[in-house]
Length: 253
Length: 221
Image (cartoon, rainbow over all chains, first blue to last red; front, side, top):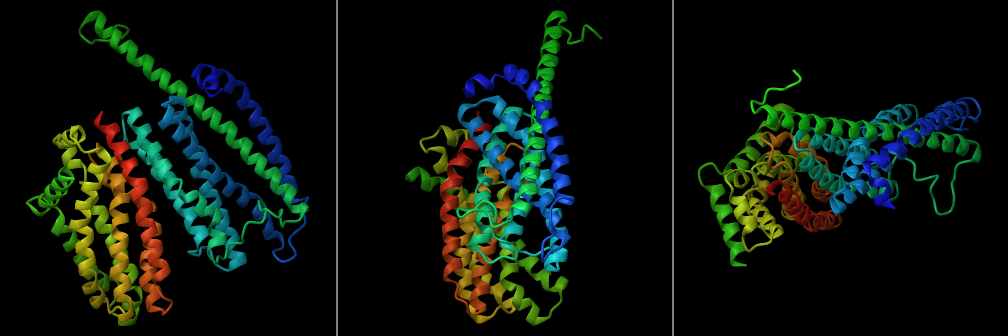
C-alpha cells in the first residue's frame, strides 16, 4: 500500500483533492474551538480566565512532538527504502514543527508568568521542549547547508533519528523529575483528570491544529515536488541545448 | 586489532605533530577558564558555586572546537577513502578516530580539571565527582560529536552547523555531568548522576558508531 501511494504523481493527484478538504475542516474546527474556548467554557476555579491559554498551548505542544515523530518516521523510511517522497515529506514538515514548538514555548511562557510568577524556569519539561526547538533548527539548517539534495536528505534523516531520543524525554519529563509543569492530565491510563467542559474545547482545538497542519503540510509537499520537477526539467533543457549546438548557448534565449 | 591500534596511534601522533589540535584544545580550556573570573568578578563564593558548571561548559566547548577536523582532514586528502576500503569496517574506523580524539582532548581535560577546580575554589568534596564525571562523560562528548562531524564532513564551513547539530544532544551529558559535582558539594551524593553519565556514554557508543559510519558512507560514495 505504501508503494501505491508513494508514487509522486499519484500522491500529487490525491493531495490536490485532500488538501482543500483539510483546510476547510481546519477552519471549521478552529472557529468552533475558539468559540468554545473563549466563550462557551467555564473559567477555572483557581486560575480564572488564564486557563484559556491552555486551548492554544496544549495542542501546540502536542503537535510539536507529533510532527517530530512524523519526521523521524519519514526519515527512517527514507533511509531504509530510499524513497524520495519520504524525504520531501520530512523536509516539508520541519518548518511547521518549528512553528508549533515556538508557539508552545511562547504561550507557555505567557501562561507561566501569571501562574508560576515567572516567564521561564529551567525544569525538565521546559528544557526538553527548548531542546526540541534547537533540534528542529539544526534539522532545517542541515537541509539549507548542502547543495546535493540526496546527501542533504541522508544527513538530515540521520540527524532526525538521533534527535528522536528527545521525544520520550519530553513525554515523561514531568513524571521522572519534580517539575513546576503539571503532569499529564489527558492521556493517562486512568482516564483524563480534566472536566469534560474543558476537555471538549481542548479536543476541538487539537483537531483544528491537526487539520491545519495536514493541509499546510500537503501544500508544502506539493510545492516541493513541483520545485524538484521544475529543477529537473530546467537541467534537461540545459543539457539538451548544450548537446544540440555544442556551445552551451541556450537556444531559446 | 593491529589495524585498529595502528589507526589510533596514527591519529594520536598526527594530533601532536604540527597542525594537530591536541595541546591547543587544552590551552583553550585553560585560557577561557582564566577569562571567566575576569568577566564574572573574583568573588570566591560565587566562583566556587558555579565551578562545576563552568568547567563542564568549557569541556563541551573544547570538544566542539576540536571536532570539526575529526574526519575532515582525512576526507579532503583521500585517506578516508583508503580507510573505508581497508580491512576495518567503517564503524571501527569511527571508533578508532573517536578514541584518538578522546585521548588527545578528553583525557587531558580530565587531568587538568582539578587545576581549574583550584582556580575557581571548588569545595573539596567536588573534586572526585568532577574528575570521575569528566572521565565517564567526555567519551559521550567525543562520540556524539563524531556523528555531527561525520554529517558535516564535506562542508567547507561545517563548524557552525556542527555546533548547531551537536549542542542540543550534549545537554543531558552536561546536566548530569555538572550535576554529579554539584550534588557532591551539596552533600547529596554523586552516585546517581555518575551512573546516568556512564549510561549516556554507553548509549551514545551504541547509537553514534553506526550513524556516523552511515553518514560517512553517503559522503564517500
